[in-house]
Image 1: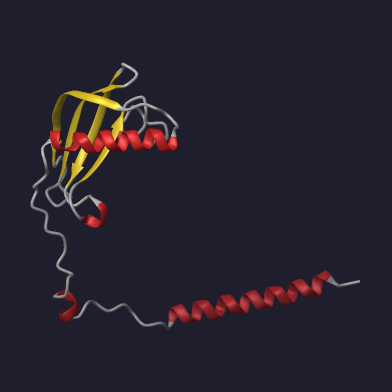
Image 2: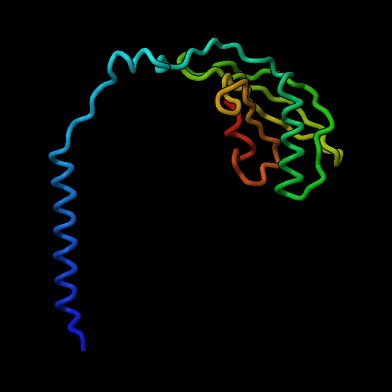
Length: 158
């Protein structure tokens, strides 16, 4: 029969030597260096936001399309947004000036089931795919089924 106590001691020694080797390597490793002048001048200038964010009405078509795709694809629902009303800006750049510019908007969305629900969304400068174009994040109150912006779309507002 195999002696388990001796094999555990060998395993413990092996793990201890491995841990000591890792700690020794990290302790005597080199320090990180700052970027050299070439690296600083080569596409590392940082973001330059102009604050040119589209008005609230420009995002409505994108919200309708994305809502229909989400409902049909993930929730097997025939719901679509048939119209909007009362669309207004709730905030523009509500935080410090160095943050990514966003325009926050709210309004009412008329759905194909006849119900009117609140929609809250933000238009983000350079927030589109790979930082090109403007992006839109939105939430329809009562239909945030994956709870991404819960409770009641609060996380989609400023």
